[in-house]
Length: 324
Ligand code: XMP
Image (cartoon, rainbow, N blue to C red; front, side, top):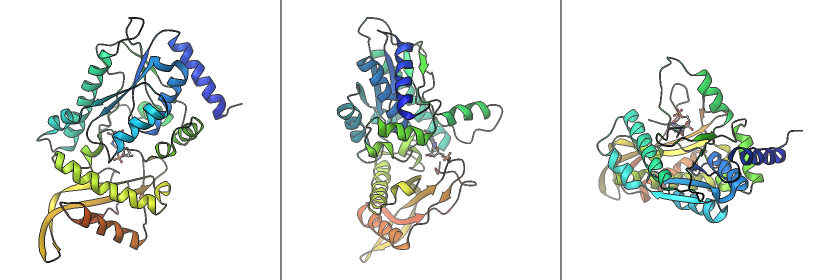
């Protein structure tokens, strides 16, 4: 008789049997629901012998890094290592404008930082870390099987993989039989904060692919502030859970505007909000006109460096969800 309550017990027992009485494990957490639920199961199964590593890449949304730390650390009691690596990511991104190159730089920097931190974690029994937790879901399992072959890469999605060169780590994937909605349900049963359980997906490269063109601290700040206005208004209007994913992008062009009697020549924000079941196809979300008016006016008035706001009305396909 398969229920989520049974699933928790089975998953916890499986992890205990795999890891045994003394070995230790690591895993990357992102603040998303998958890695949080997977980490919560590890904590339940092996307590402090699981080390969650949170790499703050400086490309997170407003207050996100703080909230994630707080929720996992104080909230769920997970043994959390936080790495503040924003400078390293932004340094490596200097001068890079090509979308694929940006993704690669961010992916490589992530692996580099993760490896460095993982190597510093020393198990109590003096041995090596033996296990790597991954929040792989069932759709990821199918996708990596069926999309192999000479097909063209549309975007190089980054994930940690078993990619830690100098450590021999066995994978633990407690969610690999589950769909996203089941993971959310599991998160609720495991007392993970609602805000985290229902958070829209956020790509690994973060704001790095939502600042089009070169990623500088100043550009990241503009994208982050505009995004925060948009998401705050969406939540206030009670629309957050009706939308699958929403965000603001900063476009690499400038546009003329007028503020008071001053001429402005500043940048452009594009808003995107979609509804989808599986993220393979998506429709843009139909907002009430007064909602869009309010968001546009707040963004140009409150976010320095923005003179114009547009709303993306392209479905996927042909447009992808992200702009880069
Ligand atoms: P696209 O833009 O490919 O996005 O239509 C589909 C979904 O995937 C997310 N996405 C990513 N997630 N690493 C991730 O973990 C990535 O590199 C990445 N790129 C896109 C995107 O936000 C959307 O939910």
